[in-house]
Image (cartoon, rainbow, N blue to C red; front, top):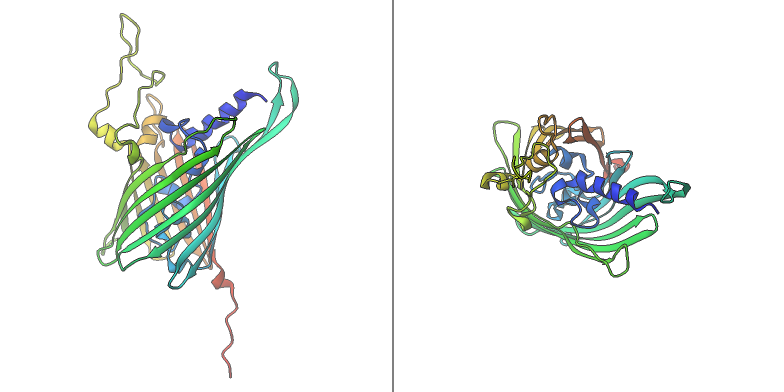
Length: 352
């Protein structure tokens, strides 16, 4: 198999997540958010309390009774015909809690298998899958907790890998003050079968904290989220190939970049806002500082780092669209659908 091809599309996926941590872990696809609403909010939405089971993808403590019998399907159109998605189902049991099950996938498509000289000798395909089993429970009027386990399988041509990851979350929601605060730990686990014998890699762990605030007399909800707190202040790094890198005129060596405390702090943050028009329509806008810093060109930023989207309810189905700007002229398109099985059940006629 042409190893250079595998290396290429692994880099593409890592870059689609966040360039600064790309290549540092296996199964990076589980960090690619297929959900349109999460994508529109900058990639993190752990403190949004709503009747949307997709929000539990990142924070299982957001699972609620109102999500009983919800079914969802999400798909994101990435780059070079790479597609990713998530399908799931939620079930609530009184006095026990709310359960969810789903599968996340990414399909890299078909590739030509060649010899080192470029002669075509066949073809191969590649894809990765993650089965999620989650649980959430409301402990009081303010607090809820949740967790989920992920079984991960990766098949890249003749190479396969297996892994297991766990998520955990806690949410504080004060409905009177219209304030929500949440913390999650995502993808704690182990790759217990590597692509090659005797070789295993880390998982894309992410510790998050976020809060959201609504206001009584206007339709806005603002969210600030901090990502990768397990690597606080360490997301930015020296990149000698960055456009505009300065060099010493005498030696020709690259002058090291100096990152301020503000830059290091902002590299962890995503900020977003929603305009909520009742229960049936919303507009969303987000900004990911790190993505813009890493992916913009030297003299052109464009839409890089910005995200936007909208959601609406049409009859019995919730629809959502999200767009994430990764680099100048290119972004990812996310589509999500949610419906509740209860809405399609025939109502029993009243007995005479």
